[in-house]
Amino acid sequence: MKPRDPFVVDPDLVDRGTRGHARTLNSLAAHLRGAGLEPRAPGPGEPQFDLVWTGADRTLCVAEVKSLTLANAVHQLRLGLGQVLQYRFKLHTRLATHVAAALVVEAEPPDASWLDLCASIDVILTWPPDFEHLMI
Image (cartoon, rainbow, N blue to C red; front, top):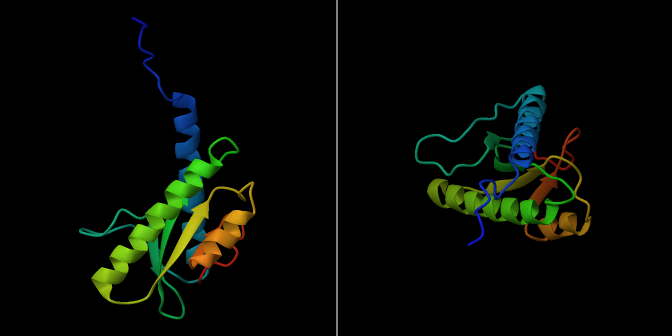
């Protein structure tokens, strides 16, 4: 019998992902606050999104943040897109209002077709430092 590897996932990669997520999340929150908006984390009974805020036009926007590297980009984008679509649906159902969805990634995706895919299903794909196309 082959001995089991105690680290199925490299802990250094997990740490890098955690740092990338936190850096991107904090940058997004600072960007929103700089625009006069107040982002917040989920409250009791809400889905576990990363941030939500109400834009200047009174539209509720929910964001999922993902760390991103060349090696994990496809997986992270697929995962984040599924999450933000579910969060948008749950908030829309709960609040009976339009909810905008934003997939916020650590860096520009290596495959530009993700921008078109997200736009085709009304999801904003954006990244620091400018967070282009974000509803503010």
